[in-house]
Image (tube, rainbow, N blue to C red; front, side, top):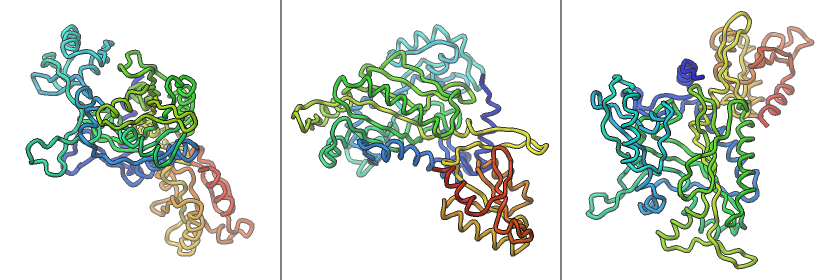
Length: 465
């Protein structure tokens, strides 16, 4: 069941606590563009680090890559983006609001196949016009549907010269992996099967950006491409699906909020395609695609570039174009899924509170250190000593002495900080039995325990490993 009230709460918290800001807000904003704030960039980078570790460091046959955003314009011809990277769009004749036709049809239970021609989509749209109202003015009067290319054109170099080809910002990040396939083979001498992982920017001239970070015009993708022998795809594909599912669980996302969905209408080059979907406030929707792309990509670039992209088996000297098994994840979508899954409201001490139950290993702040009273120099000095010691475990140890201790706890709950450490007079030795101990408060339960500083350090260390 859709819960857009929850969505509003998440967006509000994200701005209030420094996770995500609207892009160019002081100028009225820019649709589909967002900035990650001080805490948001920490959470995002932590998710990236966990992904990179799982897909590069923990595998012997995967290599990292960071390819340039600008590419020769023929790359996008070879990939099919200049001719086929489009969404069906119509415009309200009354208020000029644009709609993405396949999505509004989907909302009333009608499927528009992405392989349909413009005429076929128009025929389908015409049959259901009476059921579709403009979301802004309520009118049912729309223009003819036409396919709107999503590539973003840009200028590079001497763009005023006649015959100079237009360049594009990347419509997807993965193309750089295919372009550097030969370089990686030549420099790293990998044996098939081997993979390449990359986190990169992509830009899409979306007709109607929506649902916060879910559909934006500037995004970041985390992609892996596994190069395998032709027709040796089945077992490897199933293994990838299991690994990707387990990765989301490792972030702390609840399993009941995930599901697999197989594509019913495959693009012509694909042998199989599955999405991992998350149960967002508006319902289940895609966060990652897992695709069996056969040999399409390398074959296309070999054809358009004229460069031999076949792999030579070092033992048999057999030459072939590898097949590719791809995973492609939108970082903004995963970020939003993590926030949505972690967002909770409960009652603690007779008061309602909001908290983010983030896994400690991705939480932007691992612990907060605080003196019980900020006007007592001896407490402040000891608290700073404790913080300095804990920063040896992890640098993301916050300081907070603003307001009373209860308000500090509530503030850290909303940030998702797993532990709060309070230094009081017992720490200083007012009670000799408790000297050099601190109060450790747990975010999720609100429970507190008395521990030595070394015990606190060990607790934080174990929670983030």
